[in-house]
Image (cartoon, rainbow, N blue to C red; front, side, top):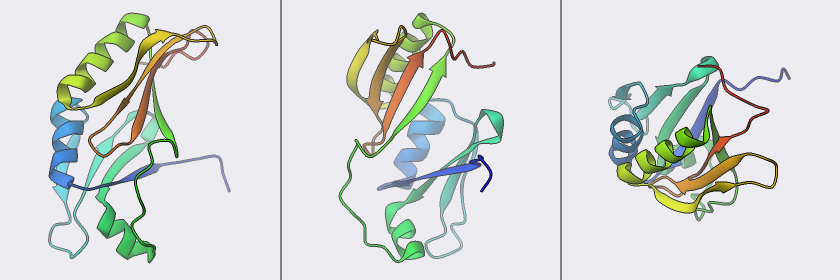
Amino acid sequence: MKPRITVLTIGVADLERSLRFYRDGLGLPTEGIIGKEFEYGAVAFFKLQGGLTLAVWPRQSLSRDTGLPVDAVSSTEFSLGHNVRSRAEVDAVMKEAQAAGATIVKKAQDTFWGGYSGYFKDPDGHLWEVAWNPQLLPED
């Protein structure tokens, strides 16, 4: 297996709500919901940097496709990291996420590793870390 991830799919309870959160609230580019003509096919894709795509797909559809039951949501299974170029940008993104409907889990603060970060949960409980790491600055 090559060290490559191209699509990150997260299961959501309400596809329209997730579309509004990520598109309207956070400003991620998307063509909107596609695949409505297929039973269990409706999905929204968001193009991210580096060729990565974030997909939001109803949990029921993901369950049906995999044959696995829908499990209870746990925000501590994984987190998505959004690295930014400054401490001020961490604060700005956290405010933007909260205004879009996110729940702030941990206010941005200095970290033990020499950076600055905070956490929020999206409307489905997915955990996002917004971080400024002086050793890992993103390209713009």
